[in-house]
Length: 256
Length: 256
DNA sequence: ATTCTCAACTGGTCCGACCATCAGACATTC
DNA sequence: GAATGTCTGATGGTCGGACCAGTTGAGAAT
Image (cartoon, rainbow over all chains, first blue to last red; front, top):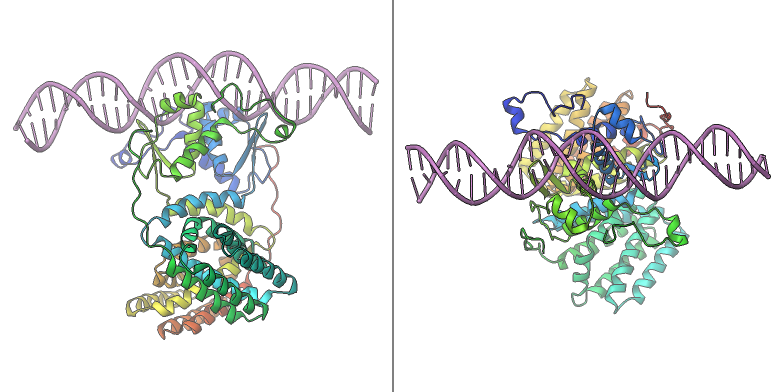
């Protein structure tokens, strides 16, 4: 970066085997580090493109590529006519990025099993805390989602949607944004799997009955019972989930 | 994108208030969607820059910015002389990106409390499963980490490190990569907080004793006891964690 | 004090140029 | 026939220049 004539000094043997880092990547690292260290706080503008070009002795393309990369990570926000500004992390953004990883891992052997185990841990723990912390208002809200779930029997799409709402309402009782985000993410990642499993004969009835028992335990402020009912529900659910998917056909070299 | 003469049709009032999307962002969306849909599988090359320029009628800069953005998200890998290739999600990469968000949220009021609650849920659940699934080999490994933790008494840095190892060994008993990743991430995010709390008089002794009790429960294959001892340990730990941090000074407009 | 104008700053996108790296086809050697 | 070397075309990395659209703030006008 301070030596624009080449990416590195004369290459040693070991250096030949490593991928030389692109200049814009170095600039990304520097700027990202400064952002994380608080040199630039949220909503602070970064230096202008022209200033960065001059300071680091690189072309405008290199600067723009670095800004595009930071923007792509949600670290900065760009607007025509003004400098890029540091942005606060957005949960939506992070979840969409995790989705790609999640989708990939769900396609690996054992991926769904791993996620269901994590889900079992988190949702049973959440149900327990919800039963400890529920008040009359949150119980009423949870009951409303249960009624909507009941009304959706016979309509698979609506049942799946209200199923998600029921689980999310339990998370909302706890009032922890990280748990809310986990619930939202998992329901998105499991969309296909859920739709498939709900088509199993009798599965919507079984799921609804489990919801009724979970609700009753939370209404009764019984943490152990809530945790056990949720555990039973998710264990039964895991039993009707499809086996690990097989490899999907690969795209060939031609585009279309 | 299909109309390179301008980003949009004549602006309506509502459109004036929205941020016009940059062309390279549209290209990122198209390519990211195609990657997620499996049009390009892992290790498949994307079209060349020149092909993308021609197909979408944009400049090379626009294409390069889009590729830089995808690379920054870890979705593609670039190499001079060959086309960008789709890469499998790398856990290290995702964790480092989540770290920025986590660090930000930990600095918000209630952030640490939220994380500790999630940690309580996940680590008690993990301890319970570990007690169910432990065999002689994994118990011996856990015991080894406990002995190293004991040997580190009096050396705060080493105690903190072996503390992490002890918790990670519990996760390893379960053998779920997502849980392993969660443990690794949280230990990183809590580095500062941990170092501070271990300086509380008597805290290393209390932590070590809790580890002994947790180990005894897992050795005895007692899930309920393991879960309870972990819950006690983390609850006590949360009690010595520092209060929410105050706002940090902002970077001013000048660079240095 | 408020509003308007304008110039400077800033980013968005395009084009052209040159150089380094890679991969595959073909020739040569054993 | 298999292994190795050479060369060429494809490809990416980086630079510079150009032009246009958007933003902001200082100064003028009311």
